[in-house]
Length: 136
Image 1 (spheres, one colour):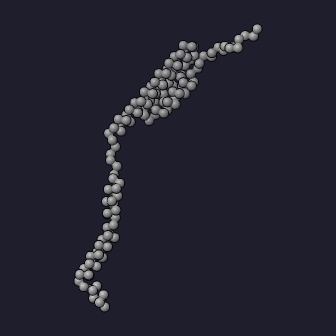
Image 2 (image 1 turned 90 degrees about the horizontal axis):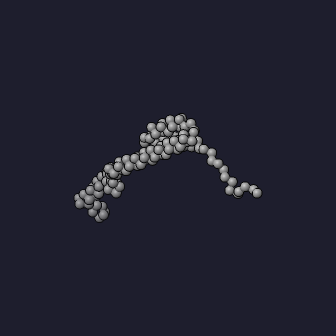
Image 3 (image 1 turned 90 degrees about the vertical axis):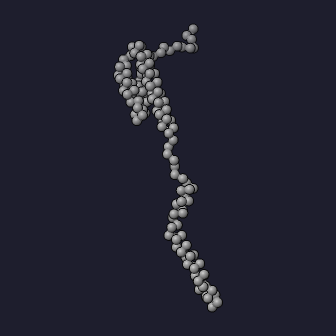
């Protein structure tokens, strides 16, 4: 009975009421402190660096120059084949078409087409030399 009288005092009831109210608030708004903690612990990603565009532009220029170099090399091989007497007009047309594909979305097609043209360039048959010497 003495315990019951102590629990029903105004001071104890006020403490129990505040504790119960705190518990209700904690259950109701528990997501807010968790969200704040997660924002602090895992901050949002910052915007991309302005240097990223410059890096991509440099890579694009490098690939563009590589395809142009390949095109000039193929044209040199075609000129050599033409001087040897081969008919290479259709291959020159294909090489020019491949050069027109030298833009970022179609650069892989330009590379593939130029390599196919290079593969199809005719080469003069070389003379075979007998290194063993002629038999006596």
